Image 1 (cartoon, rainbow, N blue to C red):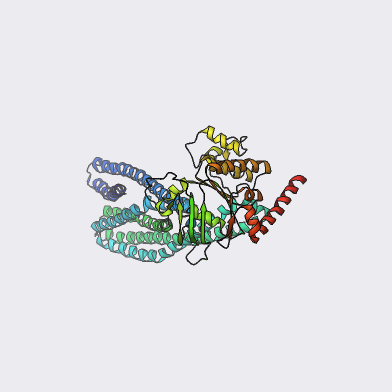
Image 2 (cartoon, rainbow, N blue to C red):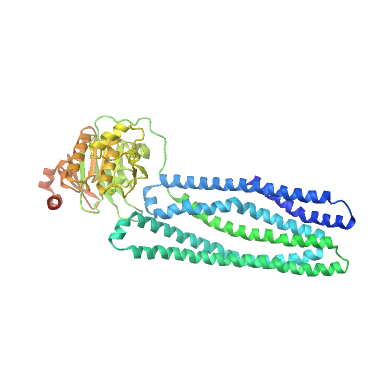
Length: 558
């Protein structure tokens, strides 16, 4: 930026010198002196100024893009390292807008605004000083016009920043609504909600446009004031100068040079108004980008020296854990104590809102406990980094989102060093051997069941100490469910499997079943034990039997 400023000032210096050299040319004509010197100097100033401005634009343009790259890198890093509640509390489209749209505005400001403001200010002052060298009376008239223009300009500018801020805020809302609607496009269409969603998005767009128009009108008013003021000043200078020339108080060459400076005065004033406006827009964008720094991130700590499994103690243990999604929220997990053996299958069942997903969020460190403690491999979670905990776990979400890339990229997400043969083996286990691993994967070219199986294959490829499954067979057919169940049973013989169960087959096959209700452990035991001792579990199983029966009938009918 400093180099760009120096080049800008050098370029401005060539512009400031040109009218004086023009006066030299006119004086040489009147005295009969050679024109070679002044004309040659004028040509050199023109070519030199062009070269300097070219270098300035190249340097500042590259600098602006590097600033944008740095801002984007910082925000992306912050997003991906942020706590899960902090990210999920904000519309993802609005966060994306800050990385894309706001950084472009920042680029425009950093690439030219600061340098442009300083340069145009120096150019304006330099022009006025040289005008004073030529004629102080004409300078007085010019300064009076500049002062009036400046006062009017400053009265208009504050409203531009406010309008720009509002426009960007509504643009962010538009991005959030649009991104969420496109992600749920099937739901939108199935509910015939296209027009309602369109109205919401267009309303945000219209509001953003309204504020942008308001800012544009104020900008137009500011530039019109600047341009009109300079033109009126030129008319006054021309009339006053002609009178002084007629009285012999001013040379014609000096009047022409002064008029050239007056015409040039429009340049720095216009640039100053544009750059101030652009700087205000950039500051608004910078403020929105800076807000990203307030997003809390997961703490980082050095890896532990000992991260290997030890003994036959439980791989996971929760001791009287309490957790909530906010300081004033009701506990989602309330005094839960639970042990997960190093090998075997533990199923978590309970009504909606019982705390099953929150329990998984605690284990995965998406949610931190307010009291109590969690232990992994006999050591408290506080002794592990987030990365170390997740290295020992694999997680399959019920929604099973896919990430951009190929099917192979998705399966290798948690274990990028795995071989293609290993990937093909786990794909066969979940009956997906027919898929092309190199096919680009999106949410629309695979079924819900295939997405779920890809997620299961991704988790199984990692061979984790604990496999966390949020009903991994909810969207698959009976044959595929059997194949996945066999793979889960094989994993349970060498590691721990912890599932949120919504299907009867998952419940019956589990070694231990934990019943949650209102964030607490209501009961735990085997299927047979709980049928005999817990009324809620019996009603849960009866409901599952009805669902299973209905599912089977629908398959037979189809």
